[in-house]
Image (tube, rainbow, N blue to C red):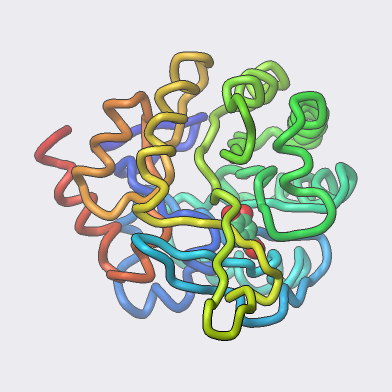
Amino acid sequence: MGIEIAGIKMKNPVMVASGTFGFGEEYSELYDLNRLGAIVTKSVTLLPREGNPPPRIVETPAGMLNSIGLQNDGLKVFLEKHLPYLSKFTVPVIVNVAGETLDEYVDVVKALSKENRVDGIELNISCPNVKKGCMAFGIDPKLTEELVKAAKKASKKPIIVKLSPNVTDITVIAKAAEKAGADALSLINTIMGMAIDIKTKKPKLAMITGGLSGPAIKPIAVRMVWQVAQAVKVPVIGIGGIMTAEDAYEFMLAGASAVQVGTANFVDIESPLKIIEGLKKYI
Ligand code: DHB
């Protein structure tokens, strides 16, 4: 079950996806985090962010919409509190990084590079819920290339680039990230969506639009993983509505070397563990 992706050695190919696992602390009371292939943290930004006003999560058929707005404690608290907590475990830690500007990304990446406990960096160029930056980088091949180049220059840690599905041709962005030196690609992030309460005639999310995740997006994710796996040579990490070992295996058949489990964590806390167990049969 062991694999190595972008130089990161994992016990198995099942990671927990950014934004669905916090910084691991709450989940560590429920099971042994060392059983996971890797933990991908919630996005870390240079400065703390309060996030968007509620309501910011709404259930939809076979999925959910969210508009959290990159809420997090910022780099300083991450380094002083969350990373030391994660250091109690041996599971690889991949830190998801987001920002409004190229300089902000670079500052965070530089700081993380100095930390032994950081095994890799996942660049979030695909968050759909903020006014500035983030997804703006991931929908433009030139900006993707510039940002990934700058991140690679700022750090020797493996850089995984998390791609947005909110584009016409995801292979164009995938190739731009690979050209700039990305060590691996993860996809897909959430798809922009919207829901309206027909009784109140108001949007269900305070920010009106949000990112759709869960089984509803799985066929789109499998298709994009399949397209990207053919377009690039670097490893692809599949994400999008994986609930079972069979879902994870489907992504691998499409070309993914590993997977991330996201929304399933909200349905069944132990789903990543069950997926690891179930995958043994197929692998
Ligand atoms: C958020 C970030 C994401 O990358 C995403 O896909 C969905 C939501 C957020 O923090 O709002």
